Length: 258
Ligand SMILES: [Zn+2]
Image 1 (cartoon, rainbow, N blue to C red):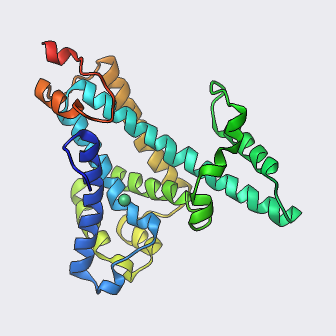
Image 2: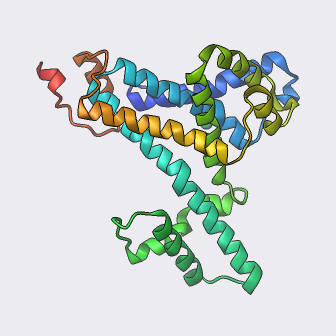
């Protein structure tokens, strides 16, 4: 990966290190034939690491940085839990239509997409006519397995549930997590989650995940309202983080003038 030290690079590196440590632990524990897993499971350690990264930023950065990173991260939850499942629901409805009618026209598909966009979206978002064809550029619908995008939601829900357990009891969690990441495909993903974390892929899983989402929103509200000041502030840190970054945040910050 490219790495210039800006905050988005740091987050990407943390993500990739999640994959790295997973392969390292599997490689040291099981035959290489078992060093694999389905896509949704693959992304669990990497997206878990992103949560650790956000925690670290909130604890160690100046307020502007923490607010920016948290806002961006909460926006990602919105993508994982509403946008990607909406694409899956669109696919499902399209398949159903083809099964019932033998075919589906572009107009039919546009209508399904528009209805779902209204259902999933907020009234405050106005849709253009052209938005009804937005489904056409989502290449997962054509190029990958059916219902691919729901992987994102399941995977993220699992990593957030794990993160919740980590926050509650890090010591016990860490022991189980190392064993979990080491097991590879010697047992199925479902059995592994049950064995090490008593997690099942059901509604409770998503509710636990939403607790973490709520925790992040609270963190953002507290920081933004000034209720909770960050523990560490540094003008140099702000400069390092913002210069050349894709956050497109102007380099004017109170910290720099202080
Ligand atoms: Zn990844």
